[in-house]
Image (cartoon, rainbow, N blue to C red; front, side):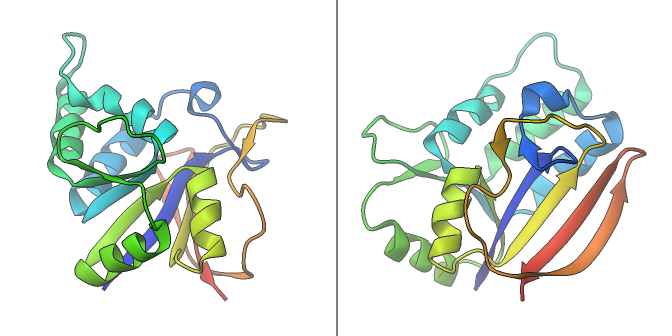
Length: 177
C-alpha cells in the first residue's frame, strides 16, 4: 500500500510561498530531484499542478540540474484532483469524481510514497484521514502572512525525523499521533 506524504517548503512561521521563499540552493534542489526519483507519483490540486507544469517543457536557460529534475518529474505519474474538466498534460490523470474512493484505490493499488502537494488538497485529505506523513521543509525566513502550510485542522502529530538539508533548511517529518 502506498503512503501519502504531504510535503512542501515553508517559512519559520508556517507559510508556503515559493516566490517569497526564493529558489532552493543547489543542495536542496538536488535533494528534491532525488526525492522525485524515489516517488511512486505525485498527487496535485489543480493550482499546484499548473505551477509544476513548468517542468513539462525544456527551457534553454536550464543547466544540468534543472534538466535532471525535469526528466525525473516527467517520468513520474501524476494525479490531479480537480472539478474542472480541463485536460491534464502528459503522464497525468484527472481525478474529478468521488475523490475519497479514487484516492483510497490509488493508495491500495501502489507501493511507495505518493507526494501530496498543496495545502488545500492536503486539508481535504487530512479530513478524510488519508495523509500518512507530513514533511515540512523549514526555511529560515519569516513571511508574516500568506497561505499556511496547514490550511485547516489537523490531527495531533508525532515527530519521527529531522534532517538538515544543505546549510539552511531543516526537514521535519511527522506522522499522525
